[in-house]
Amino acid sequence: MSDLNKLGLSEARDALRKGDVTSVELTESCLKAIDDADALNAFVHKTPEIALERAQAADVRIKGGDAPSMCGLPIGIKDLFCTKGVPSQAASKILEGFKPEYESTVSQKLADSGAVMLGKLNMDEFAMGSSNETSVYGNAVSPWRRGNDDAQLTPGGSSGGSASAVAADLCLAATGTDTGGSIRQPAAFVGITGIKPTYGRCSRWGIVAFASSLDQAGPMTKNVRDAAIMLEAMCGHDPKDSTSTELAVPNFEAMLTGDIKGKKIGIPKEYRMDGMPAEIEKLWADGAAMLKDAGAEIVDISLPHTKYALPAYYVIAPAEASSNLARYDGVRYGRRAQLGQGDGITEMYEKTRAEGFGHEVQRRVMVGTYVLSAGFYDAYYNRARKVRTLIKKDFEDVFAAGVDAILTPATPSASFGLGEMTEADPVQMYLNDVFTVTVNLAGLPGISVPAGLDAQGLPLGLQLIGRPWDEGDLLNTAYALENAAGFVAKPGKWW
Image 1 (tube, rainbow, N blue to C red):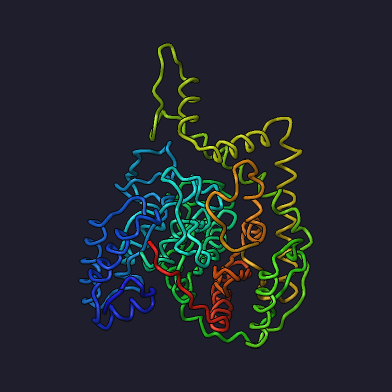
Image 2 (cartoon, helix red, strand yellow):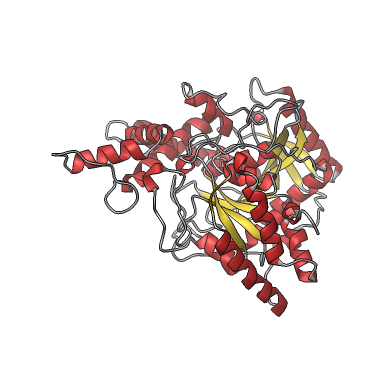
């Protein structure tokens, strides 16, 4: 078999079980693809020795007949996950040289299930960004191009390296994290599947924190079945994470029947934004028609507090970031600035943070510190928390009325060019999260499924939002949508 790196998780798993291919062959195919794809800047710390060692161990395990679904499958790990002995920088200069002495719970679960780590993936610094342009490693680049245009496009953010690597077949799947859309938006931009599970479904232990009440890890894969396989391996209760829920993890793959007859799918009127491109509007209508044809009932719903979601998110997330990032002070680990004669501890903090944090991180830390300050705490932070409760209640009311899932666009546009959204107006960039942040504020599961191409041949995604803890049902609805949409487009290889 050639082009083994182009397989998905389920195809590769079945080939491994049959003995048609070994994990070492699969891994070598991916390692070669990674070495040939430096132009994408997706992998930022390559770990070929670890990968081949794990692949050999997986082959032994598969021969022994006791291998779980992920055994022997080569994947990439976002640089936000701490990986023992391997640089884990969260794409920030301030964590330069940091090699953890421990493994994050999610990456450990994947390792225990036999998955093969190929290396660490590019991302926005501390997961703050929607275009992977805030990384200390430089921009991650999308494998997609607009028509015959050579302009480099964003793979989305903050999990841009993960999106680019999966779409370009550098790995079979990758981990991502999602605080306001950082799995779903990049997945939509590059034509892959990305699911953010319910808050508390995957442990956050060992994942560098951005906003602790919003962050959640999830898989980024080539299709819905692969997402189900990988999500099952990532989930589970973790006593080291107080927000991790003690709930049995179902066999998500077994729930993929494609049968959604009688399911109620809600279409929220508040997501019809002014100036929404006609292509996104049409994609959304087509998606609803596909689900209806598959036997679902389409109902109009209202989520009245949606318009407050972005402002609430951009108060809560920076506030939590400001608190979480206070630990990066140059004292215990990571980078410390060179100090001048007579510099004291205050100067060390100031110089280390000024050098170590990029502009976007500095901006959010300052916004967060401001909204938490004595004079503004009630006016901003407390008010945003109240709005968050109302947004959560909107969803609860809709689900209580019998709606099984909600269909929305995943992004307000297709991928844009790197450098096209200038730093002069960060709010323009923040608007990219308009359809995704509500899901994080409410702690719900959401999945992005590729559903079509725009006029320039770029992927567009649809988002399905599910009931809490009901990822199995959500994945099944996404599976029905995927089957109906029949999206098979791949980027033409230019790198």
